[in-house]
Image (tube, rainbow, N blue to C red):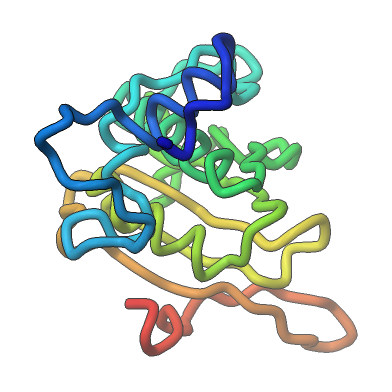
Length: 188
């Protein structure tokens, strides 16, 4: 019996079809272990159509490649039992003013996401496996929840993304965010 056969219609049926596609009787039984081409289930999320309304973009127009990639990422997080939520920080999507941030591009090419229900390493590996993002920052110490910065910067590629890990230091009694650490060893 197929793993998803007990799910009927609706959103659960669509998710089951995504995770356990129908196979002909001549094909091998489905495997639950990740394969070299599907590590961390990224292929299923990459091939899924973006789910309209999965994330609250607060009416902001963003780079279409970013929006589609982030929606697919959120779908992949949901398939693992977690949630990806766009940070409520006012600069999480677009930021006014000059600067080198992908948040300040027109349209914005970056978004900050909180990750709930799955570990940050799994979220990072899913984002990397989608083959969409050319910038990935991990932030394990954000105040609300651990999170990721995902972007589609034009000077890097998804196969060689800019990668960093944000952390905090206290300087003169103030908590200051730094981003000069590389992503942790085996994650990259």
